[in-house]
Image (cartoon, rainbow, N blue to C red; front, side, top):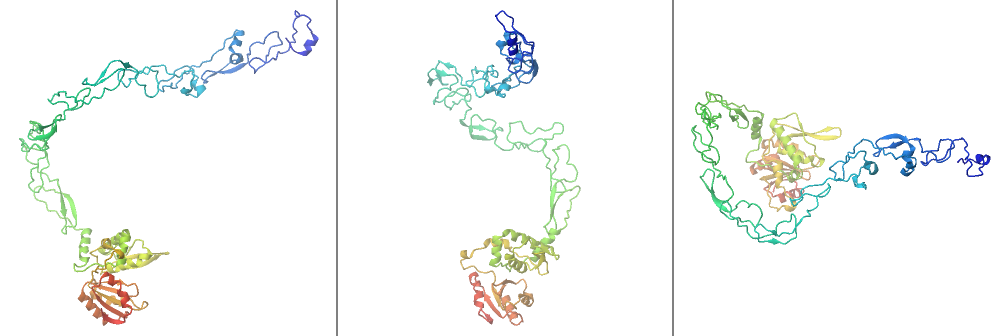
Length: 559
């Protein structure tokens, strides 16, 4: 009935049979859907079902449609009062997700598992994604199949149990029932002893199935039948002695096959009688053999020899690998000398005589011992300058200021090369130049440094390689070794100059008589050194004390 107050006061009902007053205005009552109000005019009885159009999603949520609101929001019992049935909306999309077995696809029309649980089959309480196919995989027993529904992971062990005795292969070991299906045979340590086809007995322990190969040690002949091989396992066949057949063939060659069955030598070609091996006949005009395939019916081809020979130049330092080329007469090969030969010739000329030695003071040996990489690089540069007579100047690798004096002394007194400091901006580098006095040491610093010893390791008995030494001393400001070099010009390569710790120099001589002659020449010549001393065959330990002894001496004297 109408619930408006104005209508109740103007049309009061006195009995229950009085008609219900209707105002004629919209009903406007909230419908059971809870969203819309009744749009009919004021009426008697219940409001009709909500007919407002509303979107309805299918079960999987991929498709939507427009339907009356009541079909979506009303409870099924309420809908049936109005003579309506709830309409389930299903699309035609087939589910492509995998079931719980992760092998088979769902295939259900408009499946809602993905919408409810994000596609996770394990969160599917209704069991829509439960695979109802039987697993049917063979179980570990090898006799039965898995009876469970299709599943992930390994199948369960076979549940079949036997009530029969389980016997070992020989029947002497028994396992009482119940016996699970697939259980291994009981262990039996007794020997198998079955007779094998070879006549020996099986040496293995009791086992099911076929016996393993016979391993009894016997003597057997090889394939060719020439050798008797001892201590061979019985099951082995087709043995080889490793020797070549060497049977003479019709073509004149011998069979090169290794130990083979009789009658299976290299087959000769029926058309030309060739065995297929290399001809091997010596050629007429060279020391090589014919490289053609066996040709018994023909003579060797008269073509230039294609074998290679190694040919040396006149000095034997340069070689070339050339084609022999001998045809109708012997071939004379001429290989010219090259730059490598010239370098070898100069190296032999510039090396010190056999009766001279290469001396390296302890400072140089220390450098070669502690920085062999730098020494090897500088040695390579110096050798190239000497052998190539390079007068244009070659730059040395970067030199640490702490060792520059050692390297300058090394270049000047062991190689007799000119070394000049150059500047580029703030950096100082050194260039080496060739001169006519340049020589190569027989013993390189890199090799001499291998015998370097620390002072603590020395015994004091080490002798220096020279026979005599002249010690020159003078004023640090006025003494100059360059004044001495012209005086001793005729003794070049026969002595070695080494700087002392103070202002003096050692002149080491390889011969005593040469040292005495040089000493007399220095005594009678003008130079800037005020003190001179001649020392004979000093040891390494005494050599270090010479400077202290000579500091107090004045004038010339023999030691």
